[in-house]
Image 1 (tube, rainbow, N blue to C red):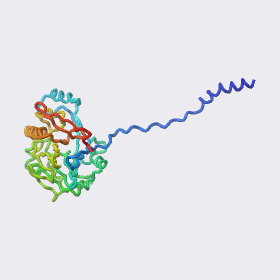
Image 2: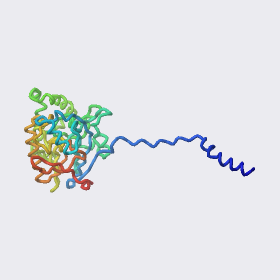
Image 3: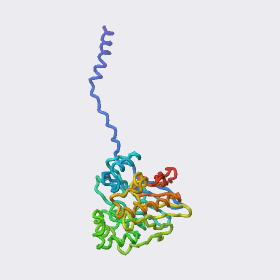
Image 4: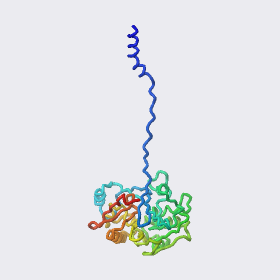
Amino acid sequence: MQRRVIMAAGLAAPALLSARPVLAQAAPPATPVTQAPGFYRFKVGSYTVTTVHDGFFRRPVAGFVQNAPLEEVQRVLAESFLPTDQIAIPFTITFVDTGRQLIVFDTGNGVTPANATNGKMIENMRAAGLDHARVNLVVMSHFHGDHVNGLLNAEGAAAFPNAEVVVPAAEWRWWNDATNESRSPEGQRPNFANSARRFAPYAGKIRQVEDGAEVAPGIRAVAAHGHTPGHTAYLIADGNAQAMFVADATNRPELLARRPDFHIVFDFDPAMAEASRRRLYDRVATDRIRVTGYHFPFPANGYLAKEGNGYRFVAADWSTGL
């Protein structure tokens, strides 16, 4: 009898256990949906170059290129495994620390709404250990909003309070003469008021430079007009080492370096822009000069190789970074 009771108790045990409430396990933490900080460093001689990502924006492919059928543009995009309905346009800012100066080339989109896909430079600068107050030279390629808006902080004051600002003389002359407004493409006319506002806190600290001028030791202006009236690239050199900030000589290189004959909606003088990029890209391809590009895929640096009637962008080997 005792054995039967023990056996019965043993058979009942699973049922008793199963009747106990099951404690809910804590859900695993959600995987973050944001990207890691976007900055990348490499050397040009003794100079340290840091590219800092400022996000991106998307626009329809239709209407982007104005002198070719949409199907032709889509074919070139597809060959580079890019979407053919919308094009994502990245923004990347180039910083150069020469040991004497901390220089920034263009200033990004500045402060944007919290849900914007651009305006990431501020947090990425912080992650890279780059302080606005340490920058003592701001070098502008041209005055489109995505390049000059970052001159101001959230309060509308100078975002780079200790910096001198270098501007291409031809660019400054055009956008500071109101009589040029009616002679500018309609889509670019807001640049007159916007640039006046963005440069206002730097009054007395703006220096105009011509083509070929030395902006700072090791930094020289290279005219690449057409995207805007004074659009300018900059050669960075230390000893035999060289890099070129090509700014907006092209937008996405997978499309516009491969087809330098494509004229895009953002170009002020498309024919002049094409001639400038061919001249600039022939130089960097022939001399094997590393480039950084404002709208290149992040980390936005590498080389341009001549290929047929265009150029092929070759991203720099990651191991050449710091």
